[in-house]
Picture 1 (cartoon, rainbow, N blue to C red):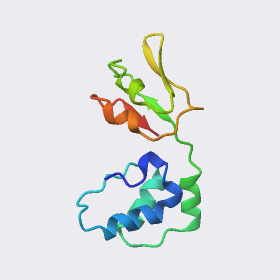
Picture 2 (tube, rainbow, N blue to C red):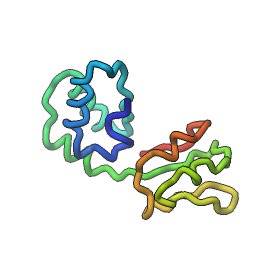
Picture 3 (cartoon, rainbow, N blue to C red):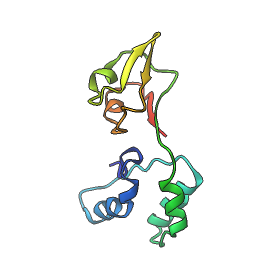
Picture 4 (tube, rainbow, N blue to C red):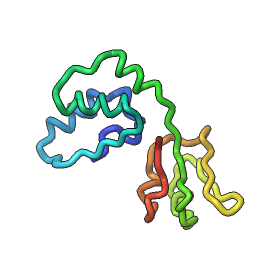
Amino acid sequence: MKPLGGGNCILNYDQCFSYLFQNENIECIAVGMKSEAEVDMNIATFSNIAISENLREKVSLQNRQLHIEFWCEKCQKCIERCQSNALSFQDGKVVVDHEKCALCGYCASVCDVFAIKIF
């Protein structure tokens, strides 16, 4: 289970992990990290160490965007899946309109080659 939804739930970090740790049906947690601060925060969480407000602020202020990797096969399934109409096909590639993108990650779930990332 991905507890932070591509970073969208970072402001509810404690609630997200509390739910997972209390749910006996969850056996695996996939935590994505893109910075040293996020690694530190996750180490603290899994070590049951309090997270400083300074570290929380550093992580919450990071800008996140949807990114289409160069190995995208241009199948356009992601465009069909996007409910925000944030993806389009232009000049032979999938393009993200960051103003429209809700960072929900639903588009990534249909990508057979894992070319869609939020970071």
